[in-house]
Image (cartoon, rainbow, N blue to C red; front, side):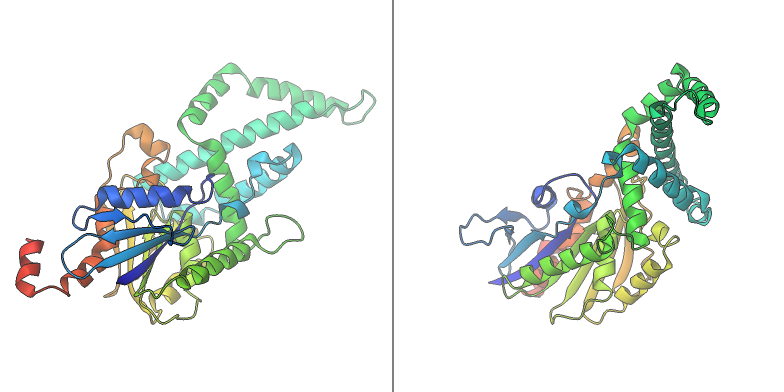
Length: 366
């Protein structure tokens, strides 16, 4: 029985371990029409593994699905103290909004620009609320030299916090997952600049890479696999590229699929990420790298994959209403997208067709 490993490297989501794996597995089963997949229930299957059988004519094949969970290593700025949110928020404004070069690459793509502009607006609304809370919390004594200044600040805050402004802010918060976007902005800065999650700890980037590498090694040790396919979704594509660009070969074919990636935009802030993309494309055991994105996904730029015979970009169709696109719901709908699933399983379909008579394979393809 031939068996291959598929490892999901999820994006930044506030969910528990295996939640994304279950969504991934269910999406594959539901959307795989050309190669029907059947879940296998066997008590001998290792914990954390979801095994699927490819029910197609030809040689039997099983797929082991695992998840490289790393979300628990990510700090949340929105849950920090008021003082931390204020100081950290200012550094994020400087990093993302003041550095104009990051916007140059998106001005020619109206949907991505619109998505990033909404994210920036949501962040500013959150930071404005943080400033107001901070000013209102200041209570200096009447004889304090700063008392007149604080009094004027409080008056300004009362004006800023008027109902008209907060009516707009409430509408933005209702449409956009503000807290998640703020946490993502903070985490991206930490990752791209090698910052730790807390003082005295290693850089969060290196902690995540170590975690994913250890889970990959453990998963490969579970069986004698014919190949390994890594699926990096959203920021998980950054982690995937960062890891596999430098990881030594382990003797079996490697496939990379990046879905809803922001590598192209983030690479403008971190040139090292662009170098990792080039290094990964030249990996000796890499047989295929497919970068998948949708024009309806307003929060994905793609990975800027160099076009070669085994590295290429694919734009898929994806339906979503206007509120769905604003709320990034389209960004999370790659796992059950039929085009994305077909690209994911294309390698196994080719392997299957290679093991059946040519006339029968032609008939099945038709």
